Length: 140
Image (cartoon, rainbow, N blue to C red; front, side, top):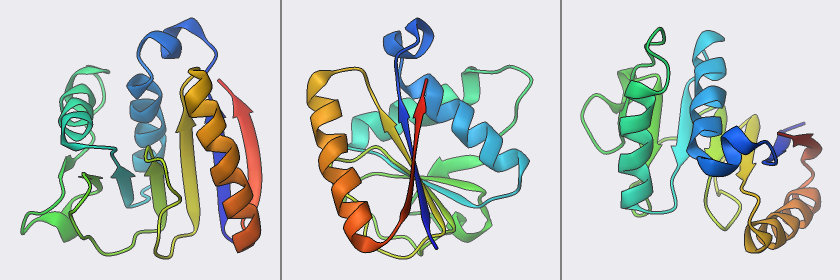
């Protein structure tokens, strides 16, 4: 059964910079050798994640790139802005307002502390539930 983990940001470290949690989750995924897609909301966010993955932990090296290149299949982590098609991967980190289409084993939903973000996450929770996903909530 596919699984969804919602990470609800509450800690000051992640409240100030929610994309740090995305980097931490990506680091964990890479350590377990899970090919990962990060579904960014827009091109600006995709570029911000790209830059932050290089700088957030000086001891970590996470091979990643913006999707849409010939090297996509060989890259562990693809950051996908809207409008770019990529093959499915087992793990998705979803930053978009909608549930992702496609097939995967696991989805990580990063939810900022903003009330509008929380409302959107409730709608996605119900949609994943309707689709038959196993659901989990993590307070961060």
